[in-house]
Amino acid sequence: MPRLYQTFGVLSAAAAAFALMQSLVTPVLPTIQHDLHTDTGTVTWVLTAWLLAASVATPLMGRIADMIGKDRALLVALAAIAVGCLVAAIAPSIGVLIFARVLQGLGGAIFPVSFGIIRDEFPAHRVTSAVGVMAAVIATGSGLGIVLAGPIVGVLNWRWLFWIPMIVVTVVGVIAKFVIPASPVRSPGRVNWLAAVLLSGWLVALLLPLSKATTWGWGSARTLGLLGLAVVLLVAWLVAEVRSATPLIDMRMMRLPAVWTTNLVSLLFGAAMFGIFAFLPQLMQVPAASGYGFGASVTEAGLLMLPMMVTMAVFGSASGPLTRWISSKLQLVAGSALGAISAFSLAMWHDSRPMVALAGGVFGIGLGLVYSSMISLIVQSVPMHQTGAASGMNTNIRTIGASIGTAIVSSIITSHLTTTGLPAESGYTESFLILSVVALAAIAVALLVPAARRRTETPSEPELLPELTPVKI
Image (cartoon, rainbow, N blue to C red; front, side, top):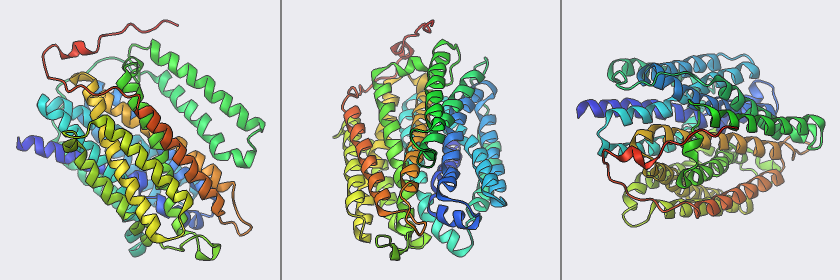
């Protein structure tokens, strides 16, 4: 048992470190923009590039982990984060910083690898609860970076947002080398590199015009051409995945009603979540002279986000015990509804700090419930031997949603600039209204999720998900 606690502790530290990288830079994007002499649209790619790289690396490295061993893949992922942090800390230009963020995004393997190690090492009756706690760790880490960024930048500077994680990740990697056991199960095979290329291709082709459309024009040849290319590459990717014996994202599993509906909620809520994570701190830092901003420092912006982080951690951890009285499906619906209410409140009433803090706290409750209930629904809907793959897939789809949401909100805000170069209030208002609509769509999809059946672990459990013959197209 002590060995299991040590393993889980190291996996939690690794997952938390990677999750922190999602949000650690969001409050300081204006500072980075000023120091590296770039514009609002370009600096947003410091976040978008990370999300894009993680979207591709998560399933790709998850498959490689099955082949070479999850313990080795975990070390590779941690090394990628450490190297990426080093490059980012010394980056002389925005281009180098964006490249460094791509390297950090390769650490996305930590999520599926951690879920897979839990599946391999833990007793069957402990897997579900361990995966739920890990989901809460990831959710909390995803938001905690917003709060920590201010004090770090205030005492040091924004480059220490990368120096400190590099040191922490290096230490975690050394400990993992001696604590994480060698993978008892490996799956020989090959990596579907075509699917990886197509996945990255359609994401880039989609995100680039979404973030640049206001500059290029929505009707311009570049915008329409790239959006058309994204559709073609998306279809090609789906065909490649369906026909592959070793898909990056298992489309056969996606056919299960509980899986595809929950993952669609994950896509939508991921977009809403990161739209707020990335741009609410920026709204708070807009100078008060603009007529709507607070002129908050990075630290003050982080403190205003603290209610969101606290409620997210509390309700994310409480989600599991709450299932005795409130089903995971109902929690998913309620969390999405709270997200919609909060986003609408931020759109309409963002002129006082107490209102922003209150709306953030409500959004945090929704985040905690949605994060944990999604993982619970997924775990209860697939056989035990599919837990790692299914949980990793859900995380990856949420990251794809975050990429899309960040690009869209960035495009809207940069299209509403004043003569002083600051974003106009209307840009934030429209963005939060759109995010509230996205959360409303998540409610509609959540209502379609089948009620979870509490399963019993039996030797015949793998038969719950019959093997399906790949469709020949």
